Structure formats: structure tokens, C-alpha cells
Amino acid sequence: MKPPLLLVIVSVLLSSFSTAFAAMAPSDGRRITQLNVVPLSVLKRSISPKFYKSLTVSPVKGWVVVRGKLIGTRISGARIIHSELNGEFDDLALKLAKEVQLAGYFGIDNRTGGNILMHLLIYQIADGTMALSFPHLAGPGGDQQKYFGCAKLSVLKADGTWTEIKGPPGLQDKGWAVRTPDLSNNIRALLRLEKIPGQ
Image (cartoon, rainbow, N blue to C red):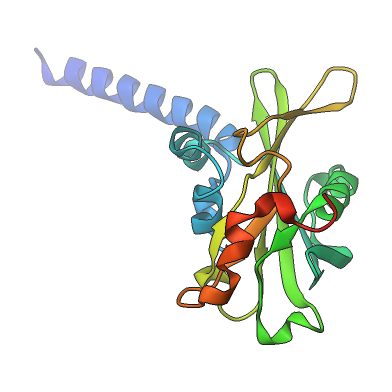
């Protein structure tokens, strides 16, 4: 093969690769692993391993964060502290935050309300738009807590309504619970998710 012809072939291949990469990059988007404030350890415990693996490689279309105080088992004073996609999903995030129930937290600041965050992640899927939400404690040691519960997963239908995808039968609609490592006095909250106040 003559050198000039080889150079032409290499040039064409590099050009094709660059074009393909450029076309792919804008739609590639961020991965959940790049959202550093999202505690993946919490999410990993609240969905199936297979689904978790798919989420780590899927591009995140948008991200909304709600902050509030955990009073009892509910979020009080919820407000948006991070919003993307021009606020399109802010109302949904606030609605989901009102539905959060978290038991078993006995921190020092529990009487005045420990800080809690709820993350709403928006994904573009083949069938439309998918929303995934889950809470976690934002105070000191929040990431060290052991979380038990079921992340909420919904799909936006063509008529503009959200349809929730049911989770495992043992966890669906039973809220969340946390357990502080080496703290045994809150184990009952973990074993009795069905007893969470407000059910």
C-alpha cells in the first residue's frame, strides 16, 4: 500500500471518529456519579442492583434538590435549593418531598429538626421521561447512616400525568428508616416500617 493512500485512509477514519464523537457528546450528558452531592450509597440500597447499574451509565437530563427539616418522620419547611430544566419539575419535587417519611433518626438535633435533602433525578428514556427520587439526612454523619427504603420511580405519560412504578412489595409505600451504626435503640424502627406514623 502506498504511503499517500494510507494517509488518506487514516485521515478519513479519524475524521469519521471525530464526527461521531462530536455528535454523541451533547446527548451524552452527566452521569449520576458526577453529581458529587448525591450519596450513591443511599440510592444503591433503595433500588435493585441491576437498575442501579443502569442508572450509573445513563445520562441525567435534570436534577432538583429539596431541603427541609425532619420533624418527627416528615419533611417540614421544604424548599427548592437546586433546580434545573427551567423549574419544570420543581412542583413535582415539592410534592414528592411532602410524601417522604423517614423513621429511626435519633440525632442530637432531632428535636429541632435535622436537615434533610430529597433528590429528584430526571432521565430521558425511550418511552418518555422518568423521575427518580430519594431522601437523605444532610447533617453531620448523614452519609454514615444505614438507610432502608424504596426510591420512588415515576414515568411521565403522554397525557401529562405521572405513573408510579411500584417497588418491592415489602417496601412499597412504607417510607424510609435509618439506623445509626452502633446505635441499637432505633432498630425497632427498621423492623417496623409499617408502623411509621401517618400510615
